[in-house]
Amino acid sequence: MENLILVGMPACGKSITGVVLAKTMRKNFVDTDLLIQEREQRPLQEIIDTDGISYFKQAEEAVLLQLDADNTVISTGGSAIYYPRAIEHLKKKGRIVYLKVSLKTVEQRLNNIKTRGVAMKKGDTIEDLYKRRVPLYEKYADITIEADDLPVEETVEKIMESV
Image (cartoon, rainbow, N blue to C red; front, top):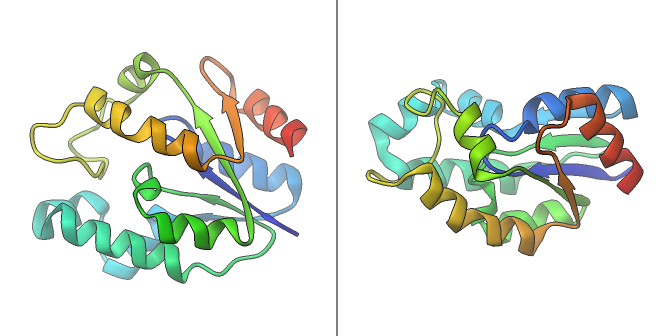
């Protein structure tokens, strides 16, 4: 039973879609942001604020590389796509599903950027992240789901049809 690995921008719906998809498909569910918090014993934003982006990225990559799951929906952090070795590791046991939303949608939904734990350099904007990450999501995706303006249930249906 293969894994489904959800990737995409912050606020594209990976976590909520992942939970509903896992329930619908009778799979387990893992949120890698929660695994990072568990490993570090603190919230993502605190890791970034205290130890910096480089440390956060090392922790995130380590969690992804250590992940060993079967029959699981895996919701990754938006920056998971930066680690080719980790993505290849995840692809060995599953398919990468890119939840694609527009920059406008991300900007509308992402109202807690200062506390959410988004891995971005000082001075970066959401648009900067979007331009940097979208080509990587597209490069690694096995399946791309256009998720703009879709309720969670419809997103889940589209994923299941594609799988």
